[in-house]
Length: 221
Image (cartoon, rainbow, N blue to C red; front, side, top):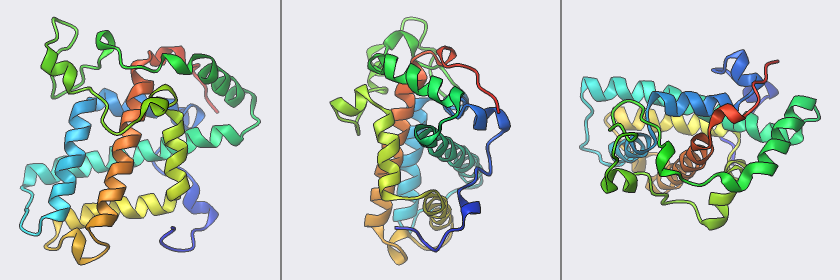
């Protein structure tokens, strides 16, 4: 349900660069190139706790990290929105991108040899340990969604629209930093549901990420 009556301008990407608009899958590369999959999941859980617990107070370092991650999540959401728009486009490069996905969709499965080693985590390319692999286990996606991660992207927009997601992200940021909690306004249930959707989006995006992103065509406007 939208938070207000959005205008067409509210659906335009605001944070994406031209190369990301031309090929929004580049946003996934950016997202997991900055921080890895387990760290993103851990951050969402911590962020939810900060918004639900009235007594929770972020220190200066946590506040800075949350602001930076908030911007990265907003970029990811805009990229996911643009990816879903590809399905309605008749532009030839978009058709090529969809065709490549349909041809290779069953290869989107976790590969222990291709785990990303972004900052704040161990180097998984050198004798990874079992506990490192477990951090990459999928929690929120069922079997069909693991074979078709784009399905998860489409499901997000069955519940929300882009202006609504932007508004929900900003509200989440505010209640995690001020002297209130989620239950004082939209409620814990609202936040729990939104948190679950974002965790599903991040899991689906990581399945796409670990299938060598270089295989996607480099498209520009």
